[in-house]
Image 1 (cartoon, one colour):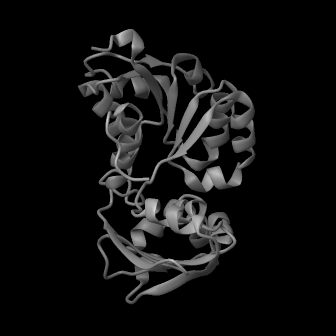
Image 2: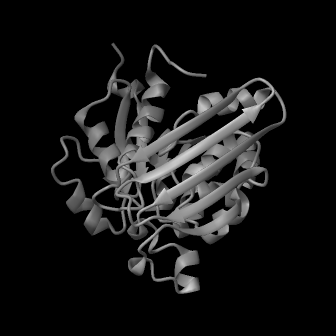
Length: 273
Protein backbone atom coordinates (compact mmCIF):
# COMPACT_ATOMS: atom_id res chain seq x y z
CA UNK A 1 0.00 0.00 0.00
CA UNK A 2 1.31 3.45 -0.88
CA UNK A 3 2.17 5.69 2.03
CA UNK A 4 0.92 9.24 2.37
CA UNK A 5 4.49 10.39 1.70
CA UNK A 6 4.39 8.75 -1.75
CA UNK A 7 1.00 10.21 -2.70
CA UNK A 8 0.88 12.84 -5.42
CA UNK A 9 0.43 16.21 -3.75
CA UNK A 10 -2.33 18.25 -5.41
CA UNK A 11 -2.92 21.98 -4.94
CA UNK A 12 -6.02 23.85 -6.07
CA UNK A 13 -5.95 27.42 -7.37
CA UNK A 14 -9.43 28.86 -7.12
CA UNK A 15 -12.25 27.61 -4.90
CA UNK A 16 -15.26 28.40 -7.05
CA UNK A 17 -17.61 26.23 -9.08
CA UNK A 18 -14.72 24.07 -10.33
CA UNK A 19 -12.03 24.18 -7.67
CA UNK A 20 -14.10 23.68 -4.53
CA UNK A 21 -15.80 20.42 -5.64
CA UNK A 22 -12.39 19.06 -6.68
CA UNK A 23 -10.89 20.04 -3.33
CA UNK A 24 -13.74 18.34 -1.44
CA UNK A 25 -13.35 15.20 -3.55
CA UNK A 26 -9.66 15.03 -2.72
CA UNK A 27 -10.34 15.66 0.95
CA UNK A 28 -12.81 12.77 1.00
CA UNK A 29 -9.89 10.52 0.10
CA UNK A 30 -8.53 9.38 -3.27
CA UNK A 31 -5.89 6.63 -3.22
CA UNK A 32 -2.60 7.99 -4.52
CA UNK A 33 -3.65 11.65 -4.34
CA UNK A 34 -3.51 14.13 -1.45
CA UNK A 35 -4.82 17.68 -1.21
CA UNK A 36 -1.82 19.69 -0.03
CA UNK A 37 -2.65 23.38 -0.55
CA UNK A 38 -5.26 25.80 -1.84
CA UNK A 39 -5.43 29.43 -2.90
CA UNK A 40 -8.74 31.26 -2.95
CA UNK A 41 -9.97 34.76 -3.64
CA UNK A 42 -8.61 35.69 -0.21
CA UNK A 43 -6.92 33.77 2.63
CA UNK A 44 -9.91 34.45 4.87
CA UNK A 45 -12.40 33.04 2.37
CA UNK A 46 -10.22 30.01 1.66
CA UNK A 47 -9.98 29.39 5.40
CA UNK A 48 -13.78 29.49 5.71
CA UNK A 49 -14.30 27.23 2.69
CA UNK A 50 -11.96 24.52 3.99
CA UNK A 51 -12.84 24.77 7.69
CA UNK A 52 -14.82 21.52 7.67
CA UNK A 53 -12.23 19.51 5.70
CA UNK A 54 -10.96 16.33 7.32
CA UNK A 55 -7.35 17.28 6.57
CA UNK A 56 -6.84 21.02 6.33
CA UNK A 57 -4.67 22.07 3.36
CA UNK A 58 -2.12 24.86 3.52
CA UNK A 59 -3.57 28.21 2.42
CA UNK A 60 -1.05 30.15 0.35
CA UNK A 61 -0.81 32.63 -2.50
CA UNK A 62 -0.93 31.60 -6.14
CA UNK A 63 2.80 32.02 -6.64
CA UNK A 64 3.54 29.69 -3.71
CA UNK A 65 1.33 26.77 -4.71
CA UNK A 66 4.10 25.08 -6.72
CA UNK A 67 6.21 24.88 -3.55
CA UNK A 68 3.54 22.73 -1.90
CA UNK A 69 2.50 20.40 -4.72
CA UNK A 70 3.46 18.03 -7.51
CA UNK A 71 0.28 18.88 -9.42
CA UNK A 72 -1.53 22.23 -9.43
CA UNK A 73 -5.12 22.56 -10.64
CA UNK A 74 -5.98 25.91 -12.24
CA UNK A 75 -9.61 26.97 -11.72
CA UNK A 76 -9.27 30.75 -11.78
CA UNK A 77 -10.84 33.85 -13.32
CA UNK A 78 -9.19 34.43 -16.72
CA UNK A 79 -7.23 37.49 -15.64
CA UNK A 80 -5.31 35.53 -12.98
CA UNK A 81 -4.22 32.62 -15.17
CA UNK A 82 -0.65 33.78 -15.88
CA UNK A 83 -0.07 34.67 -12.23
CA UNK A 84 -0.40 30.97 -11.44
CA UNK A 85 0.68 29.19 -14.60
CA UNK A 86 4.07 30.81 -15.03
CA UNK A 87 5.57 29.87 -11.63
CA UNK A 88 4.04 26.37 -11.74
CA UNK A 89 5.54 25.61 -15.14
CA UNK A 90 8.86 27.24 -14.21
CA UNK A 91 9.05 24.92 -11.19
CA UNK A 92 8.62 21.85 -13.40
CA UNK A 93 5.28 20.87 -11.92
CA UNK A 94 2.20 19.43 -13.61
CA UNK A 95 -0.41 22.11 -14.35
CA UNK A 96 -4.00 20.93 -14.88
CA UNK A 97 -5.77 23.70 -16.75
CA UNK A 98 -9.49 24.45 -16.70
CA UNK A 99 -9.22 27.88 -18.41
CA UNK A 100 -8.28 26.59 -21.86
CA UNK A 101 -8.96 29.94 -23.50
CA UNK A 102 -6.21 31.46 -21.39
CA UNK A 103 -3.89 28.58 -22.23
CA UNK A 104 -4.44 29.42 -25.90
CA UNK A 105 -3.28 32.96 -25.13
CA UNK A 106 -0.16 31.69 -23.35
CA UNK A 107 1.05 28.86 -25.58
CA UNK A 108 4.66 29.84 -24.86
CA UNK A 109 4.08 27.93 -21.62
CA UNK A 110 4.37 24.70 -23.62
CA UNK A 111 7.98 25.47 -24.55
CA UNK A 112 8.71 26.52 -20.98
CA UNK A 113 7.29 23.25 -19.69
CA UNK A 114 9.48 21.34 -22.12
CA UNK A 115 12.53 23.17 -20.78
CA UNK A 116 11.64 22.85 -17.09
CA UNK A 117 10.44 19.24 -17.18
CA UNK A 118 6.92 20.34 -16.35
CA UNK A 119 3.71 19.24 -18.03
CA UNK A 120 0.43 20.91 -18.93
CA UNK A 121 -2.77 18.88 -18.95
CA UNK A 122 -5.87 20.54 -20.41
CA UNK A 123 -8.90 19.15 -18.62
CA UNK A 124 -11.66 18.02 -20.97
CA UNK A 125 -14.22 20.29 -19.33
CA UNK A 126 -17.70 20.31 -20.84
CA UNK A 127 -16.86 18.54 -24.11
CA UNK A 128 -16.65 14.83 -24.90
CA UNK A 129 -14.98 12.74 -27.57
CA UNK A 130 -11.57 14.43 -27.61
CA UNK A 131 -9.88 11.02 -27.80
CA UNK A 132 -11.59 10.50 -31.16
CA UNK A 133 -10.67 14.02 -32.31
CA UNK A 134 -7.01 13.46 -31.42
CA UNK A 135 -7.03 10.14 -33.27
CA UNK A 136 -8.66 11.69 -36.33
CA UNK A 137 -6.11 14.53 -36.39
CA UNK A 138 -3.28 11.97 -36.40
CA UNK A 139 -4.43 10.97 -39.89
CA UNK A 140 -3.79 14.36 -41.47
CA UNK A 141 -6.09 17.15 -42.73
CA UNK A 142 -9.66 17.35 -41.49
CA UNK A 143 -12.53 19.64 -40.68
CA UNK A 144 -13.98 20.45 -37.28
CA UNK A 145 -17.11 22.58 -36.82
CA UNK A 146 -18.67 23.46 -33.48
CA UNK A 147 -21.87 25.26 -32.56
CA UNK A 148 -22.45 26.35 -28.96
CA UNK A 149 -25.90 27.44 -27.77
CA UNK A 150 -26.44 28.69 -24.24
CA UNK A 151 -29.21 30.23 -22.15
CA UNK A 152 -28.79 34.02 -22.30
CA UNK A 153 -27.80 34.25 -18.62
CA UNK A 154 -24.80 32.01 -19.31
CA UNK A 155 -23.45 34.59 -21.76
CA UNK A 156 -24.54 37.80 -20.05
CA UNK A 157 -21.07 38.51 -18.64
CA UNK A 158 -19.17 37.71 -21.84
CA UNK A 159 -16.75 40.46 -22.89
CA UNK A 160 -18.23 40.68 -26.40
CA UNK A 161 -21.80 40.97 -25.08
CA UNK A 162 -20.89 43.72 -22.62
CA UNK A 163 -18.85 45.74 -25.11
CA UNK A 164 -21.58 45.48 -27.74
CA UNK A 165 -24.26 46.49 -25.24
CA UNK A 166 -26.45 43.51 -26.12
CA UNK A 167 -29.45 43.01 -23.82
CA UNK A 168 -29.70 39.23 -23.71
CA UNK A 169 -32.46 39.37 -21.08
CA UNK A 170 -34.81 40.76 -23.73
CA UNK A 171 -34.33 37.89 -26.19
CA UNK A 172 -37.42 36.04 -27.38
CA UNK A 173 -35.72 33.87 -30.01
CA UNK A 174 -32.22 32.44 -30.68
CA UNK A 175 -29.59 34.96 -31.75
CA UNK A 176 -26.19 34.19 -33.27
CA UNK A 177 -23.57 36.20 -31.41
CA UNK A 178 -20.52 34.94 -33.28
CA UNK A 179 -19.43 32.98 -36.34
CA UNK A 180 -15.79 32.54 -37.24
CA UNK A 181 -12.81 30.60 -35.98
CA UNK A 182 -11.87 29.63 -32.44
CA UNK A 183 -8.90 32.00 -32.30
CA UNK A 184 -11.10 35.07 -32.76
CA UNK A 185 -13.82 33.68 -30.49
CA UNK A 186 -11.31 33.32 -27.65
CA UNK A 187 -10.71 37.08 -27.78
CA UNK A 188 -14.40 37.97 -27.76
CA UNK A 189 -15.50 35.35 -25.22
CA UNK A 190 -12.46 34.76 -22.95
CA UNK A 191 -14.44 32.92 -20.25
CA UNK A 192 -17.05 31.17 -22.40
CA UNK A 193 -15.37 29.16 -25.15
CA UNK A 194 -13.18 26.68 -23.27
CA UNK A 195 -14.97 23.80 -24.99
CA UNK A 196 -14.13 25.16 -28.44
CA UNK A 197 -10.49 25.69 -27.48
CA UNK A 198 -10.31 22.10 -26.24
CA UNK A 199 -11.64 20.89 -29.60
CA UNK A 200 -9.19 23.09 -31.49
CA UNK A 201 -6.13 22.03 -29.49
CA UNK A 202 -7.09 18.36 -29.77
CA UNK A 203 -7.62 18.66 -33.52
CA UNK A 204 -6.43 21.05 -36.22
CA UNK A 205 -5.77 24.26 -34.35
CA UNK A 206 -7.75 27.39 -33.45
CA UNK A 207 -7.49 29.05 -36.86
CA UNK A 208 -8.84 25.98 -38.68
CA UNK A 209 -11.66 25.14 -36.28
CA UNK A 210 -15.00 26.71 -37.24
CA UNK A 211 -17.17 28.01 -34.42
CA UNK A 212 -20.55 29.60 -33.73
CA UNK A 213 -21.97 31.02 -30.50
CA UNK A 214 -25.73 31.37 -30.01
CA UNK A 215 -27.85 32.74 -27.19
CA UNK A 216 -31.12 30.82 -27.01
CA UNK A 217 -33.82 31.79 -24.47
CA UNK A 218 -35.57 28.43 -24.93
CA UNK A 219 -32.62 26.54 -23.44
CA UNK A 220 -31.96 25.62 -19.83
CA UNK A 221 -28.69 23.81 -20.57
CA UNK A 222 -25.45 24.73 -22.31
CA UNK A 223 -25.42 22.74 -25.56
CA UNK A 224 -22.66 21.96 -28.04
CA UNK A 225 -22.75 20.24 -31.40
CA UNK A 226 -19.53 19.10 -33.06
CA UNK A 227 -18.94 17.78 -36.56
CA UNK A 228 -15.61 16.19 -37.51
CA UNK A 229 -14.82 14.99 -41.04
CA UNK A 230 -11.63 13.40 -42.37
CA UNK A 231 -10.67 10.81 -44.98
CA UNK A 232 -10.77 8.20 -42.22
CA UNK A 233 -13.88 9.10 -40.23
CA UNK A 234 -16.93 11.30 -39.90
CA UNK A 235 -18.67 11.77 -36.58
CA UNK A 236 -20.97 14.15 -34.75
CA UNK A 237 -21.16 14.86 -31.04
CA UNK A 238 -24.05 16.49 -29.20
CA UNK A 239 -23.68 17.58 -25.59
CA UNK A 240 -26.15 19.10 -23.11
CA UNK A 241 -24.49 20.32 -19.93
CA UNK A 242 -26.39 21.24 -16.79
CA UNK A 243 -25.11 24.65 -15.61
CA UNK A 244 -23.52 24.91 -12.19
CA UNK A 245 -25.71 26.43 -9.48
CA UNK A 246 -22.77 28.60 -8.45
CA UNK A 247 -21.84 29.81 -11.93
CA UNK A 248 -24.21 29.34 -14.90
CA UNK A 249 -21.31 29.75 -17.34
CA UNK A 250 -19.75 26.55 -15.94
CA UNK A 251 -21.24 23.10 -16.49
CA UNK A 252 -21.56 20.68 -13.60
CA UNK A 253 -19.44 18.19 -15.53
CA UNK A 254 -16.43 20.53 -15.61
CA UNK A 255 -15.15 19.80 -12.08
CA UNK A 256 -15.85 16.12 -12.72
CA UNK A 257 -13.56 16.27 -15.75
CA UNK A 258 -10.78 17.69 -13.56
CA UNK A 259 -11.33 14.84 -11.11
CA UNK A 260 -11.10 12.36 -13.99
CA UNK A 261 -7.82 13.92 -15.16
CA UNK A 262 -6.35 13.63 -11.66
CA UNK A 263 -7.61 10.08 -11.17
CA UNK A 264 -6.04 9.06 -14.49
CA UNK A 265 -2.63 9.92 -13.02
CA UNK A 266 -2.88 7.18 -10.41
CA UNK A 267 -5.34 4.68 -11.93
CA UNK A 268 -3.96 1.18 -12.59
CA UNK A 269 -6.22 0.95 -15.67
CA UNK A 270 -6.71 3.83 -18.11
CA UNK A 271 -9.43 3.81 -20.79
CA UNK A 272 -9.18 6.00 -23.86
CA UNK A 273 -6.27 7.14 -25.98
